[in-house]
Length: 235
Image 1 (cartoon, rainbow, N blue to C red):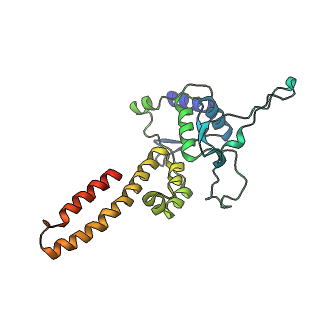
Image 2 (cartoon, helix red, strand yellow; image 1 turned 60 degrees about the vertical axis):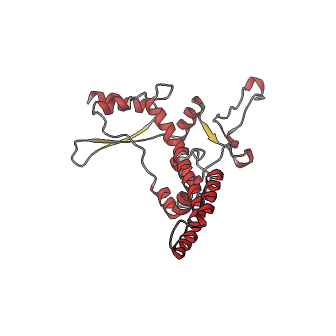
Image 3 (tube, rainbow, N blue to C red; image 1 turned 120 degrees about the vertical axis):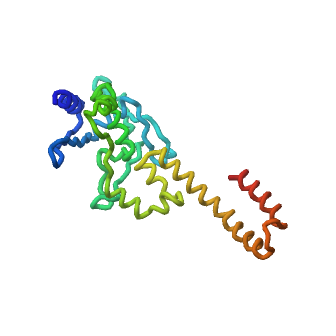
């Protein structure tokens, strides 16, 4: 209990919002952790976390930097306002359908919030808790450690699953929710599926010829070899 309280105090002192509650049998404690948008902004600037810029800046990624109001003795001539260059990710799954004014944390995607909160929990920098999750799980003091899903966004992804996961036109939704590594996998798979459609159609045509001729050893074999060679080269 003392070790548990020490870790919980470390999380609370770092600025995290804790929501602990007992399990049904009261033999385990679940702790839901959240963070204020301003806390995420401070940590993002400290670790120079890269955020997506607006389309007019080519949707590039750049390290986050808070606005600097400037010094009064210099008549604020040194102020630096850069918050307007970061893209705001409107939540189209909210009650207003994403038409409301962007929230303070709208510059962070789901994957951004997960990575920043994980950094706050694990690292020992300023405004961080420094909790050794690996050691806690090794000692069986913590059984699980995982980010929670956002149900509304999952429903939206489920509605557009073909565009998002199979065809690749909605891959931005996958990237914003699951991160770049998962999105890159499904983007490659969608590219592969499109290119496989070509040999699939040709293969059906060649199969019909083989069925008519009665053997696969016919004049189409040379065209098949050349065609697959070109396919693998351009793929």
